[in-house]
Image 1 (cartoon, rainbow, N blue to C red):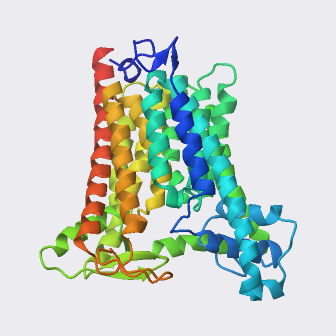
Image 2 (cartoon, one colour):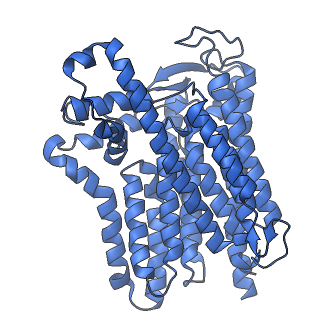
Image 3 (tube, helix red, strand yellow):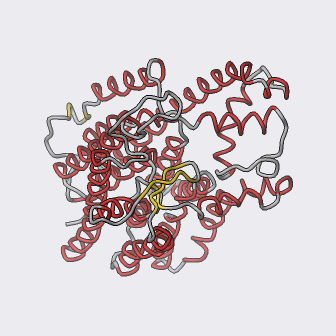
Length: 462
């Protein structure tokens, strides 16, 4: 039985009326939750102050990005931060920038504009998410849609105040282009576009780079079967490189290699408190080993005598985990299934998150849709619904800790929480984080096992 035979779009289903899924309630919840987050909700954790400062310095004060002030993000991410200031008709002068009382009004306008832009991005990403599943596994659409809407709404403190929903849109655009590339008439153009978008995602946030080898390997094997490997894949490579490299090239004349310094910033980061390794350190501390919190690189890290060794080893763990989809991609017998490379690429991104030394709460904004897309391809309807439910639980556990049980004493409001995570490492939020990471690890492991098992079942049944 093949992956696409596990479920059939034509099977009877209570969620379908005349062959069309019931999404009306989903859309009502989506619209209401997003309006609430935009108009009534006040996020407790926001990076907009940082984005605003970058934008003002680059757009209004005419400073050179990356050369005159350091930016911890790749170029496309900075461009997005600058958009609200580019749209503003009221410039900020040096005098206004130095007067924080005057700057507050400009920041409020910037924050409102940024959030509305992110809301539009969110809507576009959701539409593409639905379009991908509708074309690939339409009977999985309703549970996937519910999982997307509820899990991302649960992450409301980060949804429109961080950049990750834009990365999710890039991933959804890439996936949609991959699905459309199966067309015999326009497939080549859509596939080239998919590589370009995936390249752009790398120049937005680096994690997309792990997906490129798997889709390229799949396309190369398919082209090799047709004895046209180089001619077919060369344009794809060019498009991927163009998307990833051109944004850096555009900054080279003014900033040189400074845009690459964000790599040093992230390479120096320690064991972030929400990562899988941090959960192991928290469990390790139960046996009397010293573990403490240290604020560094804009996040809370766990520190012990073994932390530097774990941070160094995390790179090898990521590379080792990527061997799972790599070996599967190289050894699978079928060479004509283009979607196989996409599935391996999705798993590669999830494995990277699982084994990375940094796993911030907002990463779930793009991770959850990827989980739902992959599970819709690999699992039965019931199992896929379970994955959607677990994804919601993971998001809820994350939000309980971040921000509600994050600080013992909030740095701005001064409100005290004796059950806070930072810096006292109270057992309650620690337990929730460990449970969250265990669930995420089980989810990724389930999908990885299903990928290999489904492939073997397809081969034995062929």
